[in-house]
Length: 328
Image (tube, rainbow, N blue to C red; front, side, top):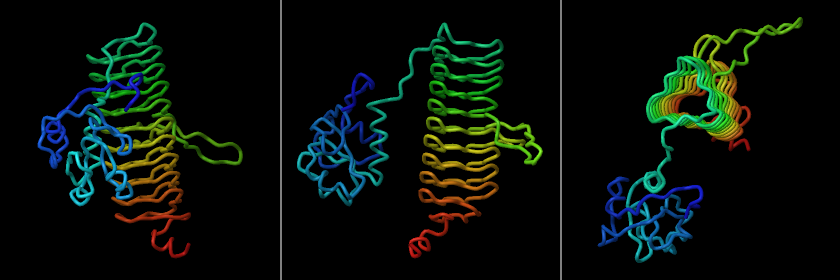
């Protein structure tokens, strides 16, 4: 059970309502109106809790659980203990995520602008938005409906946020146009100069970075991640991309929709990630490359050349994963 000092629980919800809201099929219960009060792991769940089984590794915990209800695949449903109602679905974890959002929806405080926030002339702040203490909003910035700008965050001149965005405490955003439902976690740095300069023994010469950062809808950007603005073309983050903490994305990078980028990855300038690419932790990607659609790169790999679509690569330098494992 979540600590009520930090999380506010909704509900309870009936089994029938949970099945309807998650798309699961209720099985093993003749009480569709039975109420479930919370979510919990298999090994600590009580009879009024909802849990899930998504990994076969936890079959024994599932068989011994005291959970009142559980999301499970049809294949593993036969392992359920007596008394546990089953919500059968091909994607138990995804269904559980939707149910957990019902019990613990994303909070939004009442609309307000703190007295100590610094709001420049010419800003547009739509209804329902929250601007916390010490936030700075630059001239000409536009903030959509029901946005949440946390304490000491900075939005530079001309920045645009769509509806229901959240910018974490101490984050800074400049030179950026941002879509709807984008979550920027604390400490992010978005839109700063790219690492562009002409190398010369007599002294390096900075190249002005004249592009922007374009972030499409439904993107999450983890704490302390940095996304440089483009040098002339824009840096683009596609719809539904999830970026973990402490990721570096260089100037002119283009990331397609639905990509997943895990902590401490570094993507050098002008590289393209096509749709649904996955980079595991600490992957390094050289500049001016293309990683094809649906490709997955294992942790700590180094990418130094283009990768075709639909591949699994691993190693340093990275190569097809089966080839790497044979060599190892």
